[in-house]
Image (cartoon, rainbow, N blue to C red; front, side):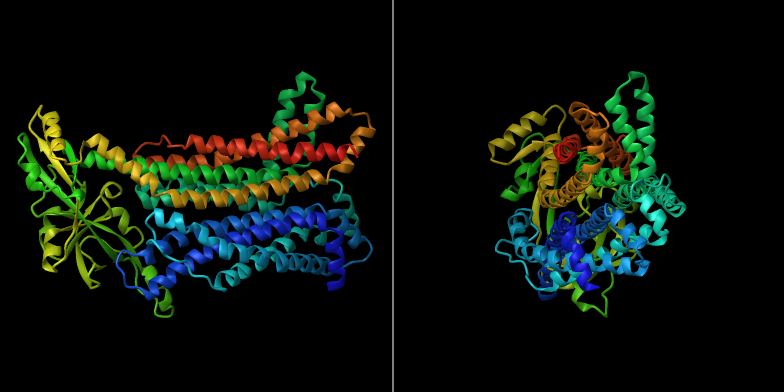
Length: 631
């Protein structure tokens, strides 16, 4: 059987080459992600540095790894299924001459295993070493210190193979299921024409996923904040998966609507293209879904980042009841500011690095204990602070309780999923390396603007810790704000009004997302190449169909027009499906973080992705199809 599988793979090497390329790209992406995750975990196990690279790198890598694994499984399954679907006639003939279903399944499985065995290592090894290209982005984002080196080991490669092999085999067996479970005669007939209906199980699964996606999208309406919003964002992936399952029905429905709309025009090429889309909706779905995923993934991720930055700016502006903000990191003191005529009140905020334990250690896997801690910076407030200058929007407890040692105020978003609440204790690892318990004495709402944790000077004084001054909030006498600002500037103090300060904070927040954007672009590049490969593969198998049209009288101009209309249909269907899938998530994000159902959309990203979809659809279909037709 292995000999027959190798012979079959050589005979179909053109169609399998695209799958091999996608396997190699997926391997590179997964192994690079594995390097980031392993480096974070190993660094955390070997280092006790507070606020260092251990937790930050592990957190970023684990977050990206979850999305990457889902996308890779989705795209790899789609690619392999598409490559095997075009060989339905071959499998049908094998059944017709006596091959059993088990033999066909074995043939398909062995072919896919050979592809993975060759392509996966070819992609995983470059991905392993290429991961170090991310080091500058990691350093500039402050995730790792200068001179940090990523850990290279065989573990990411092995983990990549453990994920890709079962995924590829399962996709192959599912793709060959239809040819196996039908009679040989029916299989030969279906190799030339697609079934008109999709299975009831597939429809039921699509309905369940759609309902689940809608429920998730509504989560921010009942659970506002970052936790509910992140859950709502996941609805886009559920809706895209539902769209993939119901894709043939959706594509056929769109084509039918197009046929009815263009019927009065007497447009022969357009009618032929839309009728072709309706009749081969399964084939077209494999082209539409990856491009729709491209639109949905890029739009939801970039728009969510923008929503987060906008929400942080709104919370910061609402919580600052000052007239001016002085940057205290340069050495300007509150005493100097208070001495300026016209200043009526000042409040100095500071910052101190610390690690907070968010879950219990895993006794069976101590290597991952570092993931139980979150690194960050705690905001430090002076004793006796009220809400007249800085308002955290406290919902439980009081900021005044921070005047006691070993107390902490937490943003409600930080408690999401931790099981902690008001009055409970959390563990904090301070810069001196000592872990101490702190009691939660207040819960506040504006954590995006002011950070997840706030402590008082009393806690730092009790343990001999020193914080780095951050800002001095200044209140002035009526109509004297401009004069005070000029006097502070004359003293050399970096000063700005609240609006300018908020914009500066929003800008710095956007700049820290550079690494996230690089990782997102890498993921989008993989999806784009996978979609382009699928389209090129589908276009390359249409030689017989187009030759038949030429023999029955279709002119070259008519065929060109037909192919262009088909490409336009793919573009429109992909953008429409991607938009519909992502819109509920963005509406929920807008409400959960900004209090309005009007979504924040990264229009530049959305438009750019739509343009990429258009270019990919045209370049991979029109030239390839017309070249096939001319043979």
